[in-house]
Image (cartoon, rainbow, N blue to C red):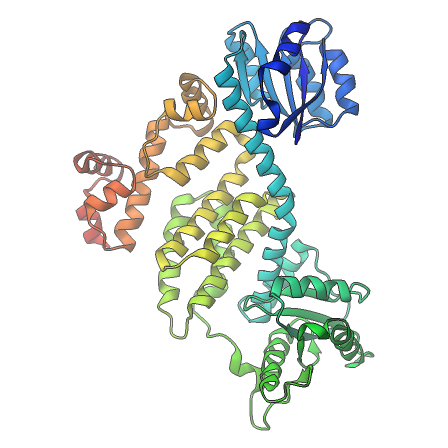
Length: 510
């Protein structure tokens, strides 16, 4: 249940609100009320509250001043304003303060119910984001470590990413342990982390192929003793779950990481012929390059993708980002030796780079949108879907970097356009969805984006159409409908307006 606090200088309003709604059906519970802003401010300092519903005109302290003061110590609080006046200035000020809705008295029950539903969903989403934030950070961390240990990023790039994630290695050497059991990789990694909690600097993560991995940093004086100690501790504590441990060789940190991981993977192959053992150490054939045999095939553009995409993200160049992602991933998919799982891992790595850019520039976590993109990448079943997921991640990243310059409602509208550009969209429909007058929404959109809503939407749709013309064999009529134009003639007119040539002429140039 989420807590609600009511404020109005007329007692019959707060009492009436309590009786008017079935608050429990919205997962809400009224935990207090006040007759003026000053009394409410003192109560809110002591009472955990998720939603504040307040009158705007009150003695002692107005509702707007109350919101400003509460925001100082509870910035995440959701707020709904009640007013007997349909004042545009009040609405504008309320929007600046990040309110959920501005309701006129007497209260329209249906509008209040719709507002409460929206607030509850936002609260649930924030709760999920908080819950999954650690999970999302772990996905990014696991992916960076996997890319390092499979040779997909340079040592310099790994050092940069490790610094951003707070990973530090105090010792000059390392070895890798690969853990495999009947338990899932996520759960196995969690259990291993608990077992090695007292082992300073050991880094446990879920490898992308379902195993768990442990990077064990070693001082030169320790040799293999500490490595064996960590392996035996894991064997002793987790052996009942059918645990098998592959152990790579010791070498210089960080460059030996990929070789040690590959050796540990190879070592686990011996579990097939010796099922009674739990600890396996790889012994390379006399004339073999050992772990080098398992290194993934290199592609000509993979090493520079993260750096180049980061540059385009920082430049806010959405069009070039979308174009490059489509071309690069199409080329990589045709590279010799490239497997679907490798391509998916590469896409996850690109998302890790986007997350790193956000953390480096903004010094804060904006995990939920990119978390959704990671899940889209994992669920992608064909190439076009994978490319679209990476493009969406790039678009989200650029939007998040620009977030400080835009109000919450415009951020939501831009995100809605990115997700639903192929559907019917209008200021009236979006205004209704986000509880704001369409005229004011149009003015706010133009002020914050520099474009009218119609121009922005048409440009966005035409850019998506250009991508499809470049990368697919779809008919122009089908592309027209997929980007939101149901009349092909109108699509041709808009395409020529923004591109200068017809869709067929553009396709012929590709």
